[in-house]
Image (cartoon, rainbow, N blue to C red; front, side, top):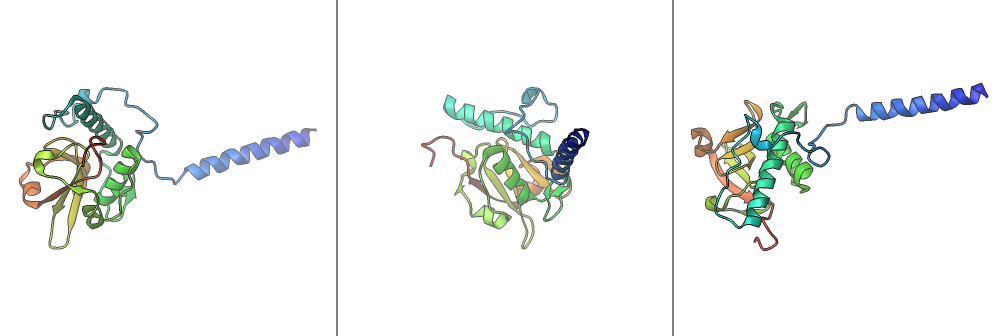
Length: 193
């Protein structure tokens, strides 16, 4: 009898150890689906302004505010993670992989892997119509591009080569001169074209 009990404990212990080992090495991703923030996003000192971007209906305004809050949560989850070309997780991530993580984990939208492929995804958006969740693209060199996601009319979330995951302002001279395009993947409503 004692021997049977020992086998059960050993099997249970082995299963527990395998579960722990399987969890190790997996990439922790965004928490929006499972954990809600403990504090209001507007109370965070280092968060971007959650100001309206344009005059819109209440329903659209609610959607935009929710997206801003989701993006602030993504920022909270990933803030400061270093930029590593080809990186896809918390050890380091590049700009296009970060867009994949944000869109998939926080908005349930799959994006292509590279910045140039993402530049072809979704629909073009005029500057006056930009909303939270729209992608923003930059030409940063002869053959290099960068991508981020708009939080409001002037701030975007991205994996910066110098600062890691951060929020930057489009009004900074570097980003103004490198600006390329906006693309919309997320619709504001079922009537949004």
